[in-house]
Amino acid sequence: MISKQITRNFLSLFLSNVIGQLFTLWAFIHIASVFGPEGFGKFSFAQVVALYFLYLADFGLQTLGTRTIAQDRGEMARHVWQISVLRIILAVACFLLLLIFVAFLPESDEIKNTIIVFGLSFLPSALLLEWVFQGTEQMEYVALGRVLKGMLFAGLVLFFVNSPEHLGYAAAFYVAGIVGASAILLWVYFRKYGLPPSRVNTSELKSTLRAAAPLAAGSFITQVNYNFGTVALGFFLTDADVGLFSAAYKVVLFLWAFAAVAAANAVFPLMAKSYKQSVTVFSDSLKNLLRIFVFAAIPVGIGGSILASQIMGFLYPPEYQKAVIVFQLSIWTVVLVIYRMVFENALIAENNQRRYFLGYMLAGLVTIVGNILLIPVLGFVAPSIVGILSESTLFVYFVASSKFIRPSFVFKITVRPLAAGLLMGLALWFLPLNLFVLLAIGIVLYFVFLVATRALSLEEVTTYVHSLVH
Image (cartoon, rainbow, N blue to C red; front, side):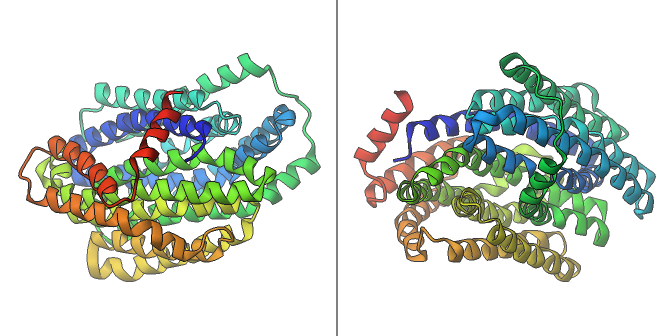
């Protein structure tokens, strides 16, 4: 079983991501309902374009900072200052690049202005100290920032966005949520640790940039994998097509964020420490974590595929039912992401940035070429298919690159949970019940089938529950 600390880290981030992302998803659903597919398509396109520049500005420094602080807390103040200075410089530079890009973008002034409003989030994002509290395993502060960000965004949108003409307002409220989270975490940091040193070591900044470069490339390509489909749809198809795709994809990203990202953020600091302390402990931890992640991944894919129509019908107006197929396909990218998170974090923890970078380069190539070739033929369904191909490529590459887990072990720990998941899916398919009743029944049945197929023992369940409450 995973350690008590990992369990608590995960629960803290899981719950905060659920709450924060629920507020964010609520805001997106409201925007989609008010704007319609065409207006929501404009909003989503503008957001994704700005996100590319935002992740370029981050330059992998959050991941590097988390790892550095987890392994060297004695010099935390110096690391925080150096990395924050770099992030501020890059934020300003990338905002200027965004302005130049927008000037040549062949889109309407409404979309261009909305992109610029989203770009105003670069500086507050550079000051967002989530990574510091992740590195020190103070996940309650990370949780505070994420919940506040979602609540501010959703509250402002629900009160003030009530017309398709409020596109710029919606983008500004998204930025306001980031400003609020940054302010509260800065206040907490200053209260706990005081002001950081004010001297800037130029040579140290350069070495930090060099160390972050592979992570930056991987992070940027990750955003290509996540969002290039939305951008490509904006160039090839109509705003309404972008809106239909984005409506289903936002729900998938919600699951992605609160499940996969929470898990990765929770385990990464401890993985980095365990690798430095003992390779044997590190290897055993990876196998235990992967097994637990597999338990979580399989019902997400099977249950999501079967309940997709009911989920979309509950969240959106009837015109968005056309996007059910997008949800059914894209949900399997979440399954693949949950699987690969263990391998990806292992590569970062062992400082193997080269393989990390090459894997994402390969996946990014599949994403770009696949969308360009398939969107004109398959329409707004194409990015979902390409997403599965891209994530499968990345997963296979990371498994092949792993020194600690063999492919045969991945297959072995998948067979019985998959059988339990298929039995659960069969039951859900034939039960004509309310969505929430089906979700509850699905969770119970999956657990029962896990025990029945001996994928999970009652003794393990007892031990795991004990680690949660003690």
